[in-house]
Length: 113
Length: 112
Image (tube, rainbow over all chains, first blue to last red; front, side, top):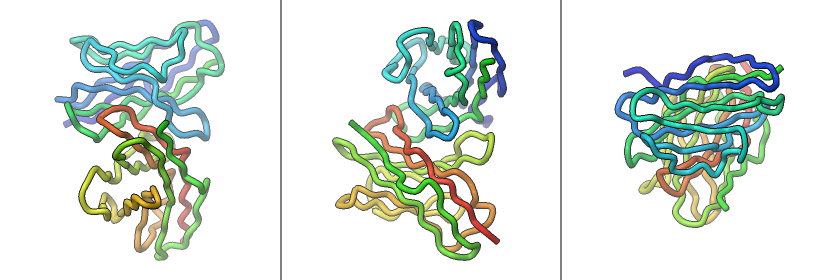
């Protein structure tokens, strides 16, 4: 059973470009969470999704950030018009229905130049 | 608001000695508590969780943690540290099957 997959592992974007981060949850998991880790800091919750639904986006910046988890395919975290402050590691986690345990992917390290 | 505090940025311990990494929490409601470990440039690996039941929870790699409701603490412990335990450790709390609130992390350094 493959773990949570994230790609790309490393992403470099110039200021103003768009970044798309992908997350494939573990097989059988219907819940996806995105977290951001700034250098030397802990993980901060961004958004919680189920298939075709955003359940909690209280941690998402109001502008430029969006997330989706379509019926088919991976979850996507999209950052438009990136700025240097978006440079961070973005982690995806998944869990099965009604479970407390979240399984984390290896992360995508975004660098904005 | 829910919060987690890890008061020590770094813990140093000699190999073979017991280790403790501290965590306190603040939640309204019954807490679900977790410990994760992060190795350099890697994702988080689950160590153990407390949901309900026995206050002493045993997890992966010989780690355990004790839930103390009166002190609102969930300290991570191991009787005998290994050099390979050196990593970044995160405590986290949730009050439902929802988002995790993480502490700022404690870097554990085990010296040979």
